[in-house]
Image (cartoon, rainbow, N blue to C red):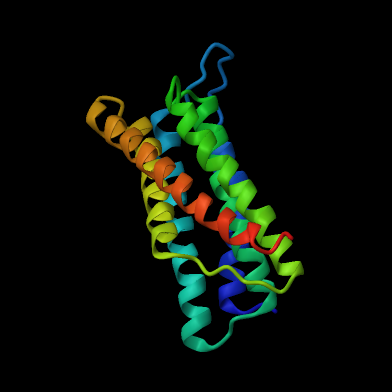
Length: 190
């Protein structure tokens, strides 16, 4: 149960409160932005969480230590991390205006696909992760990382603009892959 992949997954879940703490606004009530040093620390932690996300699955597959606990916890860890980052970046207004729609698309898809997977698991139907879904995940993780890093480098406007553009790419891929999952799931709802 406490294999290396499961420990990596659990560490990702336990790191979320630290990420929240780092991105929480400053002590001054009128400030909604964390300090640049907080963004730097949050970016480093976020990257570490992304690395553990890659390695928990890699180690489990290569060492043959895929466990039911890991299969259960890994998607939960992903959803907790994505949900927390979206909420924080909207709260700190690193994602604002129309860009909130892209973030909501991603958040709502995460919730919908989780519910659909749970429903299909009850029917013993598995829906494999597509290549496009992996591209979607990569785009959203890089976009969120870019937005966190842009908070540490406020003079680099191009970084925030690029990250927001990538957020929209992730949102479009989210709609496409979400529709694919929904279409596959509806077949089993009769």
